[in-house]
Length: 424
Image 1 (spheres, helix red, strand yellow):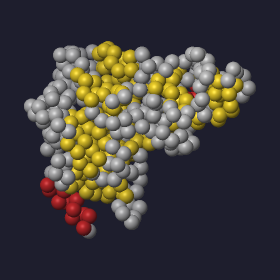
Image 2 (tube, rainbow, N blue to C red):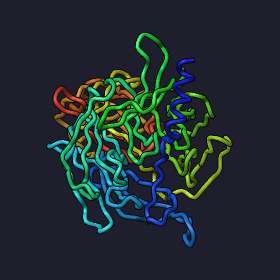
Image 3 (cartoon, rainbow, N blue to C red):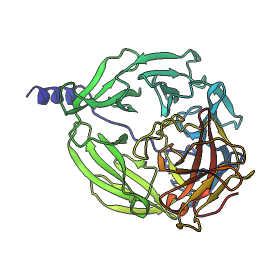
């Protein structure tokens, strides 16, 4: 009864939102579909395309520009204009995290902000001025925000708040429709197996929302608009791998569930509509009607919206105790290093590090840093090269993946554009 009364009070206080973050590339007020090709190779640039929407536009894939490369994390957002999406990415450098934004005038703005172990949150407007800010979270749960200097407030001094605990699942959204994004956490209630969703004003740490999240609120939370959250999970392996999304109200009530084949970025095209790229089309799922439809997709690898959470630090998980697979350097294949998708012995992937290397572990990870496979070290072969065998063929890992060769002092990464192609 206390929970029920609290929810009634919540509804009387403000309409709930969990705002969707659909891009508007051309600034005409209509949601566009943004896509990015994450090219293999440290010197190959990302290609940004979009499919425009609105009166007088043609729904065809249109190139924006080439921007970003290697392991950069795309973070498109409305940094320079509240009505238009800017291409942007975060790059890991020796000094930490480097944010690069292309505003409307086309001149790239570079901002050094964050540490290599921080998670980055793209498309967050923390101070409510209509311009997206820079937001990071460190491993202990400390959030830090910084303005870009584009908006009316030119104060770019960073401000930090400890919100929640290190193991929380977090998301950022304007939950009370005041124009200012709140920090939300999904976590177990102490002493129970029940989860709660709690949202806080960043500056005051005032609790603006608190409700049961439901027992099945598992996975990565993503705001979908229209009072909805999606919990995203990957299930299955190889050809049977699917990305599933459980949709529920902010108060925990189940709404619907859908899945997309393979590993997919899930984006919002409108409130209560989530989508993923499937070949040449965009599959769009309406969370309320539970119906799927198709739209033209950008001619790139995957789709993105203005809500993207990423990190350069990845800890091991189901892939087999990988530990930290963060790339300390990225290099090309050659000098003895080989990606051989089908070995003569068992028809499965074998990879070799270069001559003179001392790697003792090897992994295949995706662009989000998730471990897809762990190699079995079989010693130094073929002229003294560290050799690793995997449990399936190279093509089974898909495209735009990364091979990580791990030694006691470094993680050397090599990009793989197509898992079924040999690289040497």
